[in-house]
Length: 156
View 1: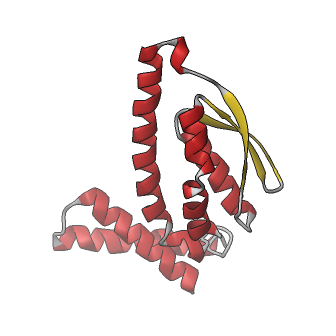
View 2: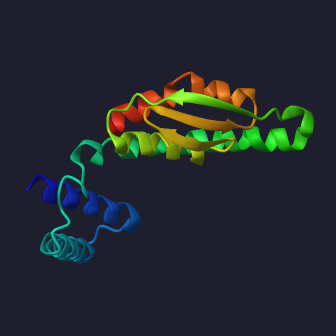
């Protein structure tokens, strides 16, 4: 029941954010659409702890806003490095430790590293992620552990 409620809240919020209209007719369509999707999802038996993990349902959007900011900042750094030429790029491979307890948390961390320009996750083995960094600044940013802490708050 909790998973159904969380899915309903997320779908409603998604509808409201994308619609931007709050007339009675559109709110009725939202309720009807959400009810249909949730009913279909329950019928298909896909509303459970694996498909709808409650621990990340409401913390993930906050993390995604932070990650979007980091992606923009990293894009600026990478563009600057490209304009500065070969001398500004010093590729390196580093190992970072993932402190997440769940596989989902480790995968979110590794994918977040790859989404951030200037870094690519090469391998994830146990608690160690091998990362290719474009320059020392990109590597140092990962070694601070800020992204690791934020992912741990989202997905344990």
